[in-house]
Structures are given as C-alpha cells and as structure tokens.
Amino acid sequence: MSSPLADFTARLLTRHGALVEHDRGEIVAVMPPPLATELGVAEYQRFAFDRRTAGPHALVVDYESPLVERFGRLVDTIGRIAGAPPPHVALKALDPEEVVTRAITLTNGVIRDCRVEAGCARYVGFMVRFELLADERISGMTEVWVNHTTRSVPRLEGLVTRLLSRREGTVDATAEPAACDDVRGIVAGAWATGAAVARRQVENRLLDAIASLRRRRERDFERLREYYQAIDEEIRRRARRALTKRDEAAVKAETSRLDATAHAFRGRVAELVDRYRVRVRLEPLATVVCTLPVHHITARIYRRSASRTIAVAWNAIDRALESPACDGCGAGVSTATLCDDRVHVLCSGCQGDCETCGRSYCKACHTRCPRQHR
Ligand SMILES: [Zn+2]
Ligand SMILES: [Zn+2]
Ligand SMILES: [Zn+2]
Image 1 (cartoon, helix red, strand yellow):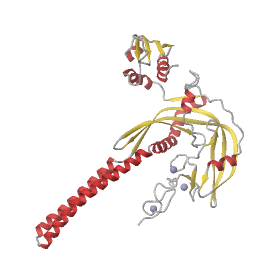
Image 2 (cartoon, helix red, strand yellow; image 1 turned 135 degrees about the horizontal axis):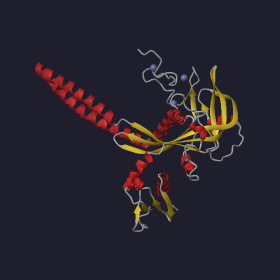
Image 3 (tube, protein in one colour; image 1 turned 90 degrees about the vertical axis):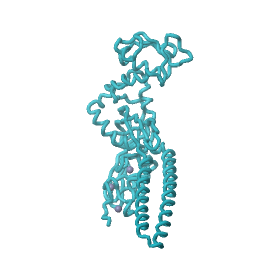
Image 4 (cartoon, protein in one colour; image 1 turned 90 degrees about the horizontal axis):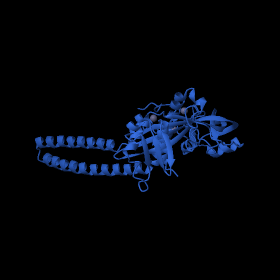
C-alpha cells in the first residue's frame, strides 16, 4: 500500500518526465537532469516515505521535507483546472412534487407546478484554502461544488477525491471536451456562487472560534470601560471641588482633561474593534469541472399575486435535491423567504432588517434600505 504522499510524488515526477517504479511503499525514479537539478536530488533516486523502514540509499520524504517545498514549484506549472469524465451513476424516476416540498420550505409563499426532466448539468468543484484573520489566525481547506447549469447548490464534498482517485490518466483538461469551449468563463461564473458557499461553510465551521473571539472582545471592552470610567470619575470629583472653591483655572484644566480622557477612550475602543475584526480570506487553489446526470426540476413559486419559475437539480451522487441559491448572496437555502416585489429567493441574512429603521428589505433588489431615513 503506498501512502498518499508516495502516490502524489510518483504522479508529479511522472508528469515531469520521470520514469517511476513502485517498490514496496517506496518509489524509484529515473529523472531528466533538469528535473533532478530543480529538486536537488540524484537522477537515479529512491524515495522512501516511512523513516522507520527506509534503507540507507533512500531519500525520506514527509510533509516537513524541504523537497515537498520544492514540489510546490513543479505544481505551480500545472494548470489549476481539470476536467473529469462523469462517474457512472444511474438516475431513478422520482416524484418532483414530493422531492421539492420535502427539501424546500418557503416561509411566506407556496410552491406549485413541479416538473421533472432527466438530463445533464455541469458542475464545478473548488478546493478552497481559507484563512480567518482576527487576533489569531486559523486556516484550512474546504471543498465546495456549484451546479453551473441551474445555479443550485449541491452537497458534494468528497467528490473531488472520488473523481481524481479513479484510474490514473483519466483526468485531464481534454477528458471533458464540452468543458473546453469556455472553461475559464465557466469557472469564473461558478466562483461567484462558490465563494459565497465557501464563506458560509467556513463561518459555520468556525462558529466556536468566532464566538470565543466575541467573548474576548466583550471582556476587553469591559476592562477598558471600567478603567476609563474610574479616571473619568476621579477628574469629575476634582472638577466639583474646584467649582466649590470657584477656582476657574482649575475647572478649565479639569474640563479639558475630561475631554482628553473621552477622546483616548474612543481611540482605544476603535483599536479594540479593529483588533477583533473577523476577516475570512478565501483562495481557490484548484478546480474540477464535471458533467453529472441529473433530474432538472422546475417549480413555480408564488408570493401574493406575483410568481416566478425556479430551476433546481436533483443529482445522482448525493441523491438529493440541491438547494436553490439565495438571490442575494448565492449561498444555498433550504428555508427561504420570498421578496414581495420580484419573488427573489432569500436566505435569512438577505431578507434582513434595516439597522436604522428596523424594517426588512430584499438585499437582491436593493443594496441598501430603500426607505427615506430622517
Ligand atoms: Zn443570502
Ligand atoms: Zn431603513
Ligand atoms: Zn427582491
């Protein structure tokens, strides 16, 4: 059994022109001289992936090795987008009405006229590196998929590994000819939704970290407030004393001290808010484009007298109806609220209350509250 790192090393070297042979968990490679020089290894080189069993002539490779760092340069020369042939999965017949009403809940509308038609849809999967930047830094990887045809949001985590670990050599940019016409445009379009989905996923995964951050911010704020309040009270006491003595110069001095204290307090609060600000940075590292057999489902959604048709898909991999994308932010929604004017499908965050007037508005229709605020 070869380890994932051994498998990766063998594929990478082969891709760059080496002849590679597997030998009981180790690999032996004959490399073109430029490749060997680039990696700083011999042209005929044995690689071992387990320090305990490695022979004297083998170069031990683990995730800490400088060699893995150098692999990065080779990886950077390979494309970031791969096409994968569709996995063999069968579609069974389904009742669209039943599937739709089970998967989608509308808080203020009804769904009617569900129709189904078997077909294909193009999917784009992103491996995304995320980084939460706050007073501490948390990073990791997540996988998100977007149905580019219907723009609904499937749950296909793990499909990248499943597609890529099939027979070697099946994955390349030409494996899916249809994807080659405008693959860059497809990927860029899908990323608009993919980024929203990834952001939602990362925030859910980091709920605990974000909650703990908020607690620390509250605690620090409380300390700051107590500290400045004590100073403030002390100055006021002195000011009152000066007032009773009718010492105008002292009153003036204490008043300007009060102003300076308030100013300093505001400055420290601004610093605190900044220190605990949560920023999530997302970077798509690699993309897989794949066509899957699906049931295309259309349904008419009604809000008062207005209505609209939405399209979603049921795919044969996760065997579930995909959530429609929120018209405001692009994340998948299973419980949706419809907007009154244009029947937009909205998540709870995008049918939000205005912070100023407290009334709700549709974030797909308006970038900010449409009402006049005094
Ligand atoms: Zn939304
Ligand atoms: Zn408002
Ligand atoms: Zn709207």
